[in-house]
Every structure is written in structure tokens, then in C-alpha cells.
Length: 99
Length: 424
Image (tube, rainbow over all chains, first blue to last red; front, top):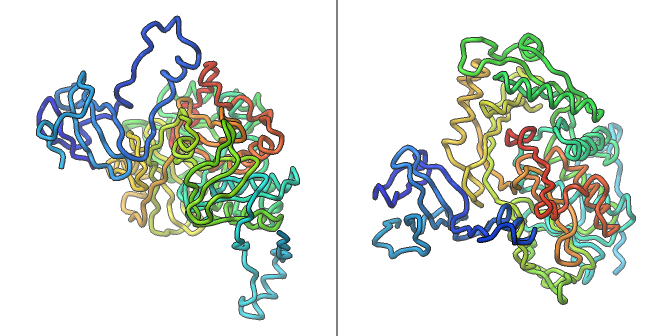
């Protein structure tokens, strides 16, 4: 089971308190009516699926109930960092103490 | 390169007796371990059931025998050897129902065709309903199945109890059993035997099986694949390449610069210690999420759900197992003290509509057969059959056409989350 640092509660909690919420940082096409089927299909259905570091969203649903971002390795399951929604890059390690 | 294939001895009861006289010391090897040729007509990446079946049907149905199957581990060591062996075809939508029924019909003659006992046992499958909405969905799905020529019945609680006397039909539980759909022709098969049977049959027809050899990239000429790079044998040329690698499809696609609408998740299963025969059918429940059967050896074979997050670790979370076992124990209180023996996970390639992707890719000469997600084992013969047709003719088999990659741009998805709702 993962031990996840919630960047809002600022505590490590067990995985069962959280829910996975899919890939992070997906950009919705700004004018959906104008984009091609390829662009719209890519936005709706195509996701990163790397062997390695993956940026994803989680929600702390039995805690603060807020969504946040995580950078996690999909092979080792090491959590590199968690950071707040709206932040686009992994902050320095002092904010997200995942060893 | 002339490589005369070994004349294969046919398996039979008489052969068993004959070999007993020499203490079973003279059995032929099941397949060769050949050195690769420089060039193949078709290279198949992935030596699981689907890949080996593809190679077999390419040779058998289309006469294309200059074929290699490249497997990074050992044959059938991925999801083929990690699933819960359930075979059924009671899918809701026409496209999926036709594809899985095609597979089921091939299963019915498979042991004879391959001259290898795949232990296919048509012991039926029950899909339980626990709510009024479950029962409405079951009515609808069984009606759709029957219109498609697929066997199915709707049972009430007493009907379920008559088939599985040990099931708990009390009305006092959190999710009482209100009924079920019943497909008598469904069942289970011996998963390893399916891989071995196809491998042996394909090898007999001249297919090269290259094990412990990982594909590390593609040899490209513009937007065209002309071969594969491997860690063990270097470059191997190919007119066409078919990728049949389940959870690692995204990695293979990445070698050609492609992205697929696939996310990989660990899916777990576990088996108990062997016990005496107690359950002679397959029981599945979407609502409480559990599915169970008993193998010929006597172990209870239980499937859990997928881990919610993307992952390539062939293990899995303990809370996922706990959730499924809680459901199993409520359905079968008699199993509450059975001890579990082994647990494992396979990496399943899930798509947004729980249906596979079969056919050409945007890169020329590169074809994908992937996205079978949590329920690919049941389709093994059909999947190989239609994919072989696609590789041979450079156009999709009619049954596979609706499963092309472009459905994610056209919007013509085939939403099988209902019939595929239990991960299995």
C-alpha cells in the first residue's frame, strides 16, 4: 500500500484514504468546436502510459477532499513528489517529503 | 536457410501407453529453439496465447510460414499464465458479441485442432444480479445475446441455488442474489496448455519461436517499419510486424513514436489450497466484484479487481484482494476458512470502452492487437484468427473492423463496460 503525502493536509496518509483520478495536466482544446477529430479524440481518450515517471491526479477523499498532483514511478511505485493543483512543475523536495 | 521442421508425433492414448514402456524418456521436444533468420515475412512481438495463436493461424489458414514470434520471457509467461481462465461470449453489443462468439466456437474444437488437450470445460457461467437494475441489465443482455445466436438464460434466485447449492441466497445480506444470467456453453480452460498447444502447432508448421529475446526498437524507413531491433539477436528484418504484448503495448508503440488509448494496470488473482470438488461452474458478480471457479486440481481460482492507478508492477495492492475476498465470503460462507495459497498480478491494457484494438496503425507495416484489458484470455483463438487475417491481407477481418484504432477519433466506441465490468 502506498503512503501518500497530501500537500494540503501536509501529512503522510495511507492509500485507502485517496482515490486515483487519472493523468494530470491534460489541456482541454480552447475552442472545441474548431478542433479536428484527431485533436478531440486525443484529448478525450489518449493518455500517457509510461514505464517510469508518471504525472497523475489523486483526491484525498476521506481527508480534505481536495485534488492534487503526484509524480510517481509506475514500475517501482516510488512517489517522487506530490504538489498542489495549479502548480505545473514538481516543487523542490522540501515541500513534498517523499524519500 | 533450410530448416527442416521436426516431424511431430501425434499425441494419443496409444502413444501414452507406448511411452510408458520406455519410462517416458523418449518424448519429443515440444518445439525447436531455432537461431533466427535474417528476415521474416511476419514478425509477431509477444509469445503469449494471442501472439502464438496469430502465428498458428497465419501458417495454417494463410500459408504464411516464414514467421517469427519474439518473446522477451518464456512462452505464456505473461497474462496468458496469470488470468483466471474464464471463457464466455455473453457480451452486450453486436460487434463484441460476434467477436467473442467467434472465439468460443473455435474453443469448442481447439483440443482436436491442435492435437493438444487444452482442458476446455464448458461448465457454464453465472453472472449474478443483486439489484433491480442488475436484473434489468441482465434481461437486456441475455435478450441481445439470444438475438445474436448466443446461448443464455435469465435465472431467478431459486434457479441460481439449483445450479450452485453452496451459494448464500439469504435475503438478509447486504446484496441479496436476485437472479443471474446463465451461459451454459461458457467455461474454463487450462491457460498454460493453450499457449503450449498453439506454440507446438505453430512450430510444427515452421514458425520460429524466439524466447528470452526482447524487442528494443524498430528499424524504420520513413514512416514504414522494415524490421525490429532485439537485445539478443540484433536486427531482424520483417515485411510486417504485429504487436501482441498486452500491458506493454504502449512501450512498443512508443518505439514507433505512437501513443495508444491504453492505460496499463495491475490485475490480481489468487488461488486457494486444493480442496475437494465443491463448485462445478463459474460464478461472477459485477455488483460486489468477485468471481470464482474451481480448477480440476481443486484450488479455488479467484479474481480480484485492478489497481486503480497506472502501474507495471506485477504484484498488486492488498486492499484490492481484501475487497474481493469479502465479497466471495459473503456469497460463499462455506469458503470463509479456506486458506489462500498463491497471489499474483498481470499487467492489463485497458481501453476507454473496454474493447480491444485490432488492426493497422498510423505507421506502415505495423499492426496492433491489444487493449483486451481485463478479459483477453477468453478471446485467444478468435483474436489470433482475426489478427492473422489482418496481417495476411493487409486489411481488417470483417469481425475486427469495428475494433480499429480510428474509433477513438470517429466516436464509434463499443461500450462493453457492462459485460466486461468484472475484471477477469
